[in-house]
Image 1: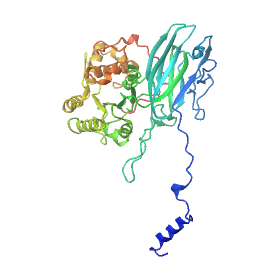
Image 2: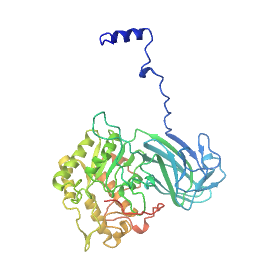
Image 3: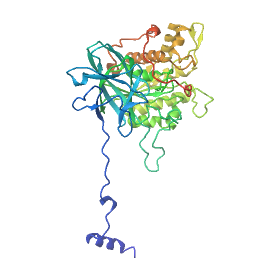
Amino acid sequence: MHLLLRPLIIGCLAVLGLMPARAADAPAAPVAPPAPSSFKFDFGGQAAPGYTAVKPTTVYSKESGFGFDLGTTPTAVGQAGGDPLRDGFVTSDKPFFFSVNVPEGNYRVTVTLGDAQADSVTTIKSESRRLMLERVRTPAGKFETRTFIANVRNAKVPPPPLNAPGNDHVELNNREDGPNGLVLHWDDKLTLEFSDTHPSIGAVTIDKVDDLPTVFVIGDSTVTDQPREPTTSWGQMLPRFFKPQVAVANHAESGETMKSFLTELRFDKVMSLIKKGDYLIMQFGHNDSKANWPQTYVEANTTYKSYLKTFIAEARRRGVTPIIVNPMQRHNFDGAKVRNSHGDYPEAVRQVAKEEGVAFIDLTAMSITFMEALGPEKSLVAQSGGRDATHHSAYGAYELAKCIVQGIKDNKLDLAKYIVDDFGTFDPAHPDDPAKFDVPVSPGRATQAPRGN
């Protein structure tokens, strides 16, 4: 066919209705309905109107989308009562897990707690041991509803445009995506852990919320959501200290540096989710300083400071408030004093804070004060089972999280208005008595030390 005649012939065929339908005119493929983002579960007897009944034998599966998980089975307790949400509950003398398949995002979780016949004490964690509610007590015959915000995420990153560099997912390591599947903070469900001396769960409602300010946290193993006992990090204790008007999204991971946070697309992931009015807390330095890691090493007074300033700039251009934190000191005593094991890196963070006029939390100084207040021997209780000088126990992580919260108050950030009322103030020179610390241990033991720091 002559090229000059082709447009004319095509036009004539189109007028006569003889041209095949274009792809755009073809019948649209059926679109899957959006995944539900609001749920109501009743763990008592007969389900209240609008609620889904959950029995102790309801086991989580992808097909059902909800149920008790990780091989745990609570016990159902029935009791008389006029309120259908209080006529029964589930409990156990061991921690138990309940999971719901939900899309990525922030969720307002409301729980009904209490027992008509006995005192109830309930602690709730979400995902990988994030402390949400600590030892909520209800006297016999009394019931309470408590609310917290849980964050759920996946490893997907918006794909780059055609011919642009990048990828469509975070490069997870084998600790996050091992032979037993994804860790709880990367999988496709929201997992709640209930425990304590007498947890009494009558009902749970879960609602997706998109309009809350979110505190994004990035860093290394001293910040991440550690999946197994005894190692615990301050990032997973942080949600306990905020009201249900703000979310905490902890993207930190063991072994990370500022460079690897970029190359593994972890920073891309955070930037794809973050929005104006959010906060970005960043604590690096433990691994960035390792000259024996040549691919990610940064020198304290040059490249380290430059990377910090780049992260700050990326946050600010999105309308996000950056907060920089220098690394806590390791448990290295010289007599009664803690030795500096981070060289010039803590001071470099201080200098960047001054140069950029950015909110700064001096966790280096606060951690020294904290450890020296306890002393060389007693402060070992703050470390991760005596494994090393870097990582922390639940108690140590809890105290360091309180340092972060106090730092938020000291910086007079607007975020401070969301701090829970029972926080008050915290002076690391007068830490909580470790003998009185009583957050329940989660099931399972770590099989290996955290990757890197």
